Length: 425
Image 1 (spheres, one colour):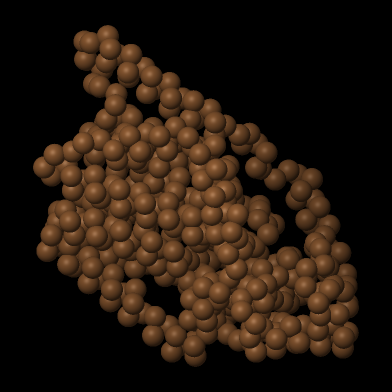
Image 2 (image 1 turned 135 degrees about the vertical axis):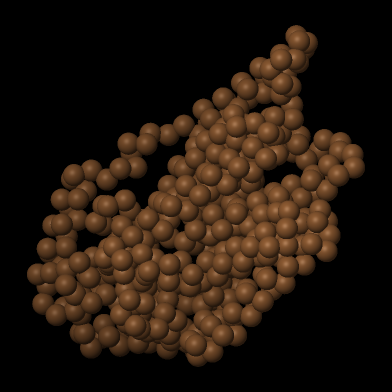
């Protein structure tokens, strides 16, 4: 977490967003060659700015804002399953199963991106929506859902099913949950849009809704992301949801069905759009970790059951879980930057510092900040504007980049690959 260079190619630009907040500049502005915001909601950036103000600006405090919520995810999944099963053992298995998806979900839980914070808030909201026994507790669930929405826009796909499930279980006691979420999530939108002169809605809602869909992912999400990776978890989750329930247990199954569907839908939605990486799978893996292990508990009788048949069924369930962990095996050491990586990073920063004047490095502008130079708009943010429907805003941005290049504003342009320069030169 203390590695001074990017662990993922957009981390540095996220740090530049935080730097804007710390320097008093607006987060959402008209796109320009100078800066284009990511299509993210603002909460993660402001929490990270608070940590960076205390700990000093670097990638470390931003990663800490992801790492601590990842621990909260494990704790919430453990608590959720323990409450459902009454078993600490199954709670630990569930948390461990989600942790084992670390590589499959893009090695994302401890990097400077908003996903861990979004997921922690969503899971905590679901926990209180399921187990909250007071109006205050349910109102707190609404607050958590609202904060998750202001962290990542896919949060309503989890929050709304959770609220419906809570309404079925708790009846009128769930009204504070719904009211709190509606006021804090919906009411903040016009305020933020007013503060940023309309650009909040442009980046947080307009651009994401106009990103091209990747049609092959409609099927590949199931045939590649889920079934080959977590097949046992999928099967045990289906077994749990398909079991017959009576009385109040029907409400519990309905909540599980809605919450699980919401978690999977949030992941599916994130994967469908251009730029959707495997970090989008985190909600699905977290939901399946809960449903899978509760399903395993339902199929595995207590250890004191004398029937040999029951013991065989229990052994089969445990073996299936072991197989699932085996399918998620990876080499942790492969995720750790080496000394050679750090040395190469320092050499590159020194090279950048040696160029006179301004340098355009759209894939890794954070390295320019380390070299004592100003950074410019990040490639991914530029592409988000250009990939949306053709607009005057996109044409103006493209024209500004072309003009800067033609006028030789930059002493050097450093690229991983040509990206949009073929269009503008």
